[in-house]
Image 1 (cartoon, rainbow, N blue to C red):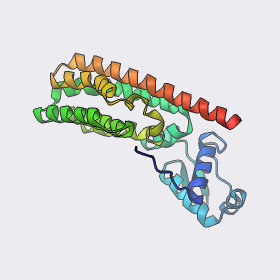
Image 2 (tube, rainbow, N blue to C red):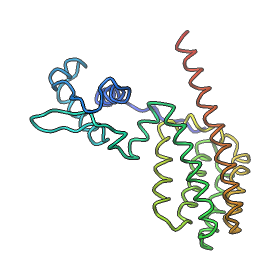
Image 3 (cartoon, rainbow, N blue to C red):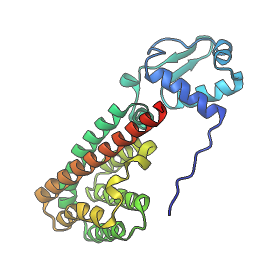
Length: 242
């Protein structure tokens, strides 16, 4: 049985998470300056070195901008941010995850249709091989990852590299909560049955069928995953209230 490893969090990790939450929930408003480093470090009970490491990470994430002699300013991520922010936003707010799934559905349908028109013979064979890996996967985590590779290959089959990067972006966006989204992948036969019509239509070069199959697949798995995630959140809330 595959077991997820427990991540080890450092003080920098925890401080980064606390600061990120304060930025994303509006405690620190866009355009405002953070308090001076000495004051901020004292407020969180950490050293200035630890604070600097956390601020550097958040700056790389696109949430902060530091200028010597001025200070550290909160950036307006909705105006200036890019897709690299989606993983942290999805982990912070379930509402983002629903919007990510909506984008996944629209882009996935488009990709399936284009893949059916543009796929090569080699890509058709590869799609069938990857689909078989879904059926042969030993557990939910492996099924989920095999399913991801089918979608990556569908994106490659469009011949448009932007679709490949968009697919990667959307998968990375819900990576922080991937373990809670395994419900559609518990049974390899069911997972195969859901995905097979998409692959079959692409291999047969049936663009409209591929789009319809992708719509059914993406809506169905989205519903299962969001329902599972909500169930886990309710159970966690109930446990915390006890």
